[in-house]
Length: 321
Image (tube, rainbow, N blue to C red; front, side, top):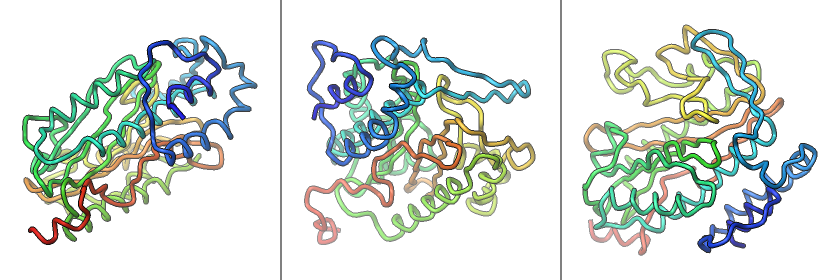
């Protein structure tokens, strides 16, 4: 099924003309229809979402002001739907990245290709950044892209930083290895970052605090030898997502341990972790979340349990190098 037809089917609109015939893999469509059409269809119908109501400006957003630096945004079912649709576009874009990556192209060529791909989606208002870093550029994470040529065996990570679909933001990292299997050391590094991420996700629930989440992450001084937490400010952190890219709750060992913020129903945010070897390689992973009354919904569905290997001849790299 065409992804554009699926979008408009779910939100009750006719497909816009002259759309490109984009497709996404069945497993992403299965996840997408499971989280949207089955569970949310009745909610959307009850809230009257149809026609031009998809326009983000029509969404009702409640803002609670608890201090000058603590603004937490809560969305309606409609705004949650926009958030989930943005994540589904992210799923498809990571799949497109996996297909496009190969040795010999540059980081900025990957960024350009994915920018073009993203702007082909109707309703895509802005793509602030597509971070593509490879090899030594992945640690430290300079959050950019360059003309570096991607080589066989390179670790590459890609982040969809602030793509804006109908007013709603996303942030979504995944890590790849291009041309051959990652080394055991790289696999172990990734497993550590993944454990940090999911330990922090397990701490998210209504009534918990940002201290509970940040305390699941290790000290920057003990892990990487930094002088203080500030030097690793965004290595392990979380941030609110919605109409703004970096909203509350902001989660970090720098301030969350001493200044906790309560997690409340309806919050939408991302959690992200990274780990690596300086000037050699680094891995980074990120998940987008919705906090429900009795559960947490992860809406970023691209595979995450291991480094995604982009290798046309699986295992061949072991015989060469």
